[in-house]
Length: 152
Image (cartoon, rainbow, N blue to C red; front, side, top):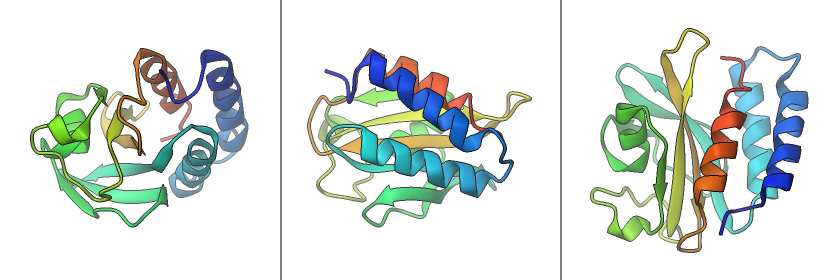
């Protein structure tokens, strides 16, 4: 079962477009979109971004409990998504080899790579849930559409 349904995701994408349309500042855009997702998706305890810099992921704007600041490429769900440049949907993070537990209340996770307009890795969108199996293909499809709206 997705964190929300397709109809609500369509609305979230429209809201994200409105929040970021006239703004070029990545901090402002990712802060607003993180807050939008955190308060709109069910059972979410973290929504935020990690930016790719100096061959690692560095914590950016987010909503939720304090998080890991540096994540190495290929490590954890975020580092795996960044290294593979493919969305990671993890039903149960406790079964993910190398999971990084920033918040012990997290049980499932989706991480979507974010790319610049010229196709380079910019970072990742990371969303955690307190429930096992929160995220599915619906979340993946719509969150991948949503990150394309970022102005990076």
